[in-house]
Length: 408
Image (cartoon, rainbow, N blue to C red; front, side):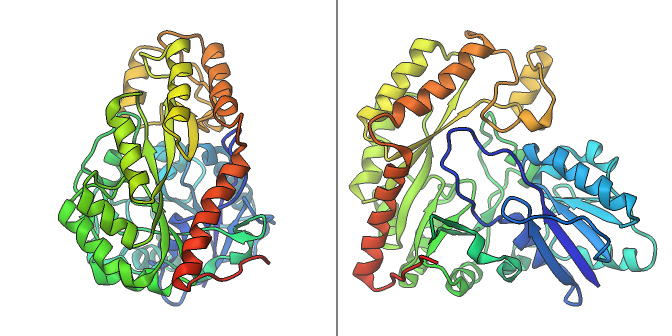
């Protein structure tokens, strides 16, 4: 059976350097498909999609809310041709009811061990409208290596330089951050994959640079220590979300090849200043994730925050606007207060104001978003800061003999 798996395009974050990373969700999902299924993958962000009846079954994988309207458009076009369409992925879960109106089937939950039934139902003419495995998680041991063979790897580079491949070492998150939907999607229980599975997958990736996409590695200190010890012999260079603020953990992370971290920066406190310094002390760069539009944010506060980021010598910064995604505490609070003025999901890029801020007008917040990007990168443009980070990792690769020229 031929299965065409599509990853819809979306509008990228305004002001962010343009490059494409290979998507993670579709390649993890593809690993859960029955072995007799032939997969054709189209990432519409880097490839042109031709809509024609050229497969037995159409799958649409949506990670972001900003993808859903395009996903629905694609599905409607295929269904007009008589093709059966199934949706899955994070954004499908967040918008399941709306998505069902454009689908023959909607899959909710994690796919491991479940897709054989879906394809059997399709063959027997019994495809269900909803496959609901919400928080009915498969055994974490059943999560295999992602199917990166479905990707056209040459399409994922920055100015001819191959960037990172995505991999995950755990699922779930014990935290419940205000703007985040992971609590809804993956549950509050931290579910680490067995070390041998993670290391085997990392070893098999033909790329020395990885992005460990777990929501946070700082969830279980003993597990984190064990993971980094296992990773040291791989000599990979990698980035991730936060690492435990602990000398032993940070030292092991550096030995294991930690390149940089994405660290949420929520104020200009001494705690944040020290947090960034400690990463730097271990040779780990930091790209700050800075959320604008919280209820205590004023124009003066945001401008002083940007000055603080420059003062602590943050390596890079990514500014986003608070966005009330469905199934988050942010959505519940703003919706109940009547403060959300746009439900056009194309606007939910994290770069557009879709709600009424408390201490600013929407126009002021939008303007401050552009100010933050422009001010932070005023002296050193974003491309130059990225080049400096890339040069550091290339120097490390040359030192340990893992560097390969990647210009195509």
